[in-house]
Image (tube, rainbow, N blue to C red):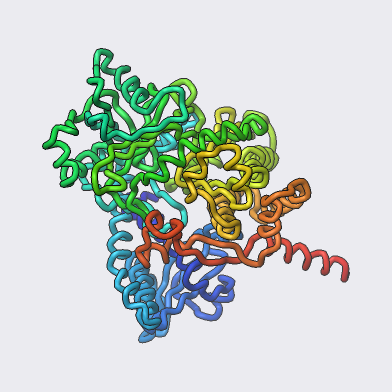
Length: 608
């Protein structure tokens, strides 16, 4: 059956939205499919496992969705959508986009009835972003739906994997919202469309420049050296520095009064685009060239998912501090399959009256240059839903290994999963336990080396995602005194464990487990039980905050979950909020569910 790009985009948007609504707003009334069909006697044929009814009391309406696959850990696979027609007293097929808008309207009515008129007013913003995200996704799918080689190739490179995220965040209602990027700019700057572009350079008076580096070379030296690879004879006057910029940010900067004033005074010169061509990684604002040993992370005047993406001064300092700290901790020497993608240097122009001028640039190491870029993939790209009639990249990987090794796919899957667990989940928990450092290790920040098919190494990237425990502050500051200049890196462990629970388990681990389950490779409950046993073993070995964290994961009835739908509805820019706090809720803990089922089974067995 042929599916149009719009149909595929609408389905992907619907999957993420309905799952978000069920998790964050109303879990609905679940019924076995046969029971529901017998009770409701619908005119249409259903093939799913279950049906979920969702009441909308504010609109005196009711919807139902068919659940094709019910997930223990992640995202249910949703089939048909229906609305109850009170006049005809029957369920009728419901178009998906109007249903999503009706559910947003229900949120609006709920907020108004609770006296939250300010929050209720963001109804229009969510509807706007939902439709914009859906249309953008359709555009990307239209351009890439016949591009099987670079989407699913066994020899996929780092940048091809970065460009393959056609659907985006698996549990976000507006994953492809790109407010601030005009339609004509997408082919150049959207990673999904495989665009390439030159950086826009400014020559800045050295008196205005602020830079730092944990590398043997300064930030300005790194920038000049990178440009000279493509323009060998380029020189910079001794009293100036080069600052590269994302073209979108450069266009924005040139419209700002504080920049125009500096240009008029000849303190900043606009050199325009030049040098090598770069490609956007999945974040849009970090750019990559296979020929360069450095990547650059910029601010861009674009709202992506929940936030306007800007580099903050404290993030620049955090990158250099964490590079030095990780070097002193020697954690990656102790656990060599765990790696950090460092952000060792930064540069910016300091302009009067502005804490951040907009010129902030983070310089990131590039562990994946040409020749070392094969088989490198973010977890998000690995577990993403496939296009219709395709298989996920994870499923293709397991099937290829099973064919090569002539072994059962389930055996291969368990071997693969164990290697993944060791280099990623276990290493991240040990880092928190031994040094009080937790990382915002979600799917997109988590990169695996799969050059052999199996996870050989895990890479963490993101200088916005460091959480240092206050309990370890004295030891860490003694090791690296400059941490006293970064108080915003330290948090209480209650908050750290809430964030760490979501990013490491809800977002990363459970997405992998859900993919194995949906692809029919290994059941989710089997993997959850395997993880539970590993956590019990690890808990006995640990003695720091990691031990307490595991106890929380194993024994809590509910776990913290970042509510992206509610964050979007309330129009919270989490990067600007206090403690960068999004809206969090709590959902049933899969580990507790599996443990209960195991106890019931043991009790039933003993009674026989």
